[in-house]
Amino acid sequence: DHFGSDDNLEVASTLNSIGLVLFNQNIYALAKGCFVDSLRVRCKFLGPNHRDVAILYYNIATICLETGDDDQAIQLYKETLRVERNALGPQHQDVILTLQHLGLVHQQRGELDLGLKYFTKALEIERQRSREDATATSSHIA
Image 1 (spheres, one colour):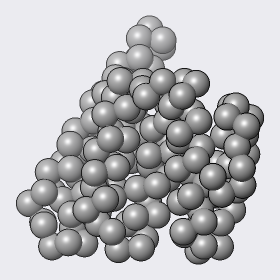
Image 2: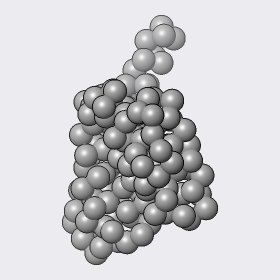
Image 3: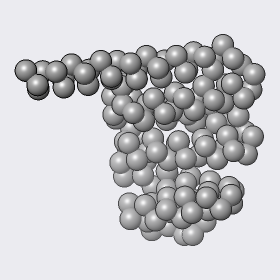
């Protein structure tokens, strides 16, 4: 533990906040440690399929992306996607963002077909959401 831990959700929340500050200061190793500690606590109390768990996987994946650990970033973004789909549903905005990040990692690696696959899936969900929003809006007008 980087700042000690009492293993409760308040500590996990504060660790996440510290991690975000450190991330914004480009102090990636310490930020990652805070996120990992927060993830451990949140998994313990909230279970592995909670939205807050997905956020931490996403934060850690983004650090991996920033530090050049693309393989780990891909693995963690995929885990983020799994949790988000379970916790939030397959068409949630967070799912779209994670798909876009997976596309970005593959694009940066020169794996353009894989990058395109993830960007295309994100676009499909965005279009579906737009159609649903338009249908909901028109039904309220009538």
